[in-house]
Length: 273
Image (cartoon, rainbow, N blue to C red):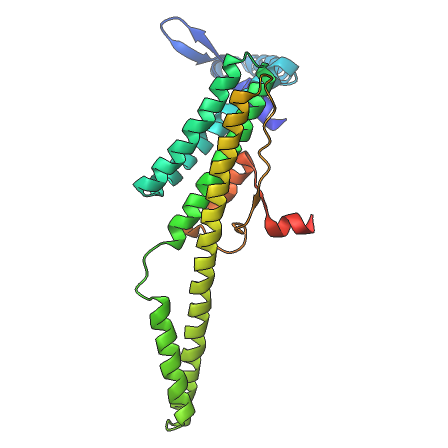
C-alpha cells in the first residue's frame, strides 16, 4: 500500500510547454510557503493532501496503473541484466542463442498468421521466452566451465602418481611426508572437480541440443497443425544448474532473473517431486 500512496503523492500531469508536473508535490510546497505567512495554510494543505492522496491511492484503476508501471520497470531491468549475460558469451554461443530466438519468433509468426487468440499468443510468447532463458543459462554455465586453466587432467594424474610413488618409498622425513600427503589430497580433489566439470559440460551440451530439438518440434507442429496450440515450457534438465557455483560471479544475477523467467526442473528435482 505504501507504494500506492507514494505514487499518488508523486502523480504528475502533462502541462503544455512545461512537461510533466508533480501536482501534489507542488501543492504541498505552495501551502508550506504560504504557511509561513499564515499558519492556517498548513492545516488547509494537510487536509487537502490527506483527502486527495488516499482517495487516489485506494482507487482500483490507479493501483492497476501503478502495477503496470512497476512491471514495466522491472521487465526493463531484467532485460538489461539479460543482455549483460549475452555479452559475456563468445560469438559462436551468441549466434546459437540468436538462432534459437529466431525460431521462437517464427513460431509466433505462424500463430499470428493463423489468427490465434491473443491469450494463446501471449501464453506461447512467455513459454518460448522461458525456454530461451534456460538456453542462455546453459550457455553462461558452459562459458564459466570452459574458462582456461593452466592444468590438464593428464598433468594432474601424473603428479598424483609421482607423489604416490614418493610416499610409498618412505625416504622422507615425517614433516615432509605430511606435506606431500596434504598436497596429494589436494591434487585428488582437483582431479575429481575437473572430471565432474567435464561431465557437467557434456550434460549442458545435451540440454542445449534437447532445447534446440524441442523448439524445432514446436515450429513444425505450429506449421502443420491447423488449430493453434498452447506451448508448454516444462523441461527436465540433465545438468544440475542449481547445484554448485557454475555461474561464477554471475550467480546472483542468474538467481534474480530466475524470479522473472522461472526455473526448470532438474533430473534430481523431478525424481523427488
